[in-house]
Length: 276
Length: 258
Ligand SMILES: Nc1ncnc2c1ncn2[C@@H]1O[C@H](COP(=O)(O)OP(=O)(O)OP(=O)(O)O)[C@@H](O)[C@H]1O
Ligand SMILES: [Mg+2]
Image 1 (cartoon, rainbow over the protein chains, first blue to last red):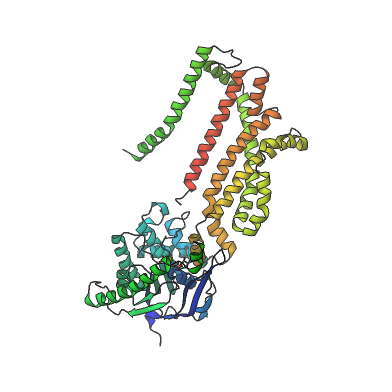
Image 2: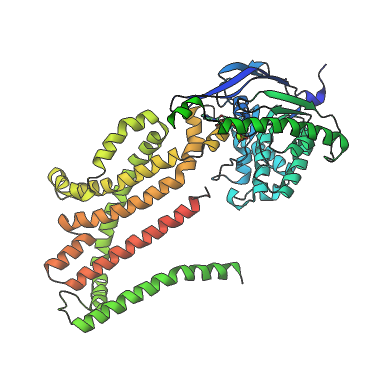
């Protein structure tokens, strides 16, 4: 039997996924993996890792913007071959369409679903209400603050009722207070709608506050270095002793990887050495 | 202060420097005339120009000539934009098409529209088609190049957002994201294109026309009426300025923060 709360999708399977970029000069950059992981339907997964370790790469692979160099990703039982409304995304830079009003932005994905106009509007307004922006429906995007923009982006992402939500440092550009408010709101919406969330963050505290599970990635090419299951009920107090223990472990391992990144970045490769 | 009053004050603040500049020009002009006492057929005093302005306005000639010039520019501008915008959108989104067509663009672009006037006369005579042709060339390149730039500069994250939210085909992405996202750049092209077109039509009318503002000033020269020439110049300047202001307004309306 399926748990009704988790019935809106199947697990996401990441099987031996690796990505190597080809630069214009012909060099190859191994950016990610291979990594394997299963994410349960409705699970809130956060990923932390040193800068440049391939987190965005992983998320873009999950979104279907590009294909892995190796391995495969299976969503809803089928391998990912491109973007889909079932895997929606919240971008760090909001990525709202500035020529559309707030409500039209939320409707964008619903139009793709070919819903009738009135139904579309109604759903969009419902989701705007969910993020507290019902009074801003007709505003233009330029008139919104960063926090409001990201709320619109969250409404847009949830409105298509995807089974998976991909978030790449969605609160990274926001001030601490707005960030906190949006973390609460996101949790509230997530608990209401029970979607799988894959959430990338640089903030260990944010990961501890939000996640069912935290994955720590190693320096580039990013692999899974460690993971923690966090089964403390929400809302959480990140200063609680249980979370502080996990926090310490994460920082200890992260420091190892940061040292690694530093060595990688400063040691000349043999080719560079010869040029000098 | 009420919103309307505030916006009125804002407008006054924007217009004032232009009025001051206009006054300065007239004052300096008058001083030069007073000091050097030139022959009125070389440099007429402001008052003489004002009188000619009244005369040309009264007998309808100014209106007719301005209407001719504007009609030519607008038809050429529409025609040219109708070709340049779609072509620019396509060239901006297709690397291979851009590579194919860009050499032609770059080879023709340095040839000033004015350099086409003789050919236009040889091909089309001194009728309307030749003038529209010359102006269309002047409009074409700014519109095309700005459109291409606009498409190429569309934020890749917006393209990703479009793909996530259901633009499954290149056509859908083009229609729903690329075109609206590059619209502000297209308007910039239309504005600059109108400016070059406006310059080109006056030049074309100087050489080959029986009417239009270019003809008005060329004719003024022939009959040694410098006052008519200056009237024509002022009207050319004013109309060009006003259309530029209009396009800038349009640009602001469409130019969402990027
Ligand atoms: N298009 C590309 N071509 C070549 N290399 C790339 C490309 N995109 C990313 N990379 C490289 O791949 C590595 C991983 O990049 P990615 O953006 O996934 O890292 P990240 O973990 O998201 O970093 P950050 O935390 O700073 O956002 C980096 O070293 C980056 O330089
Ligand atoms: Mg990143």
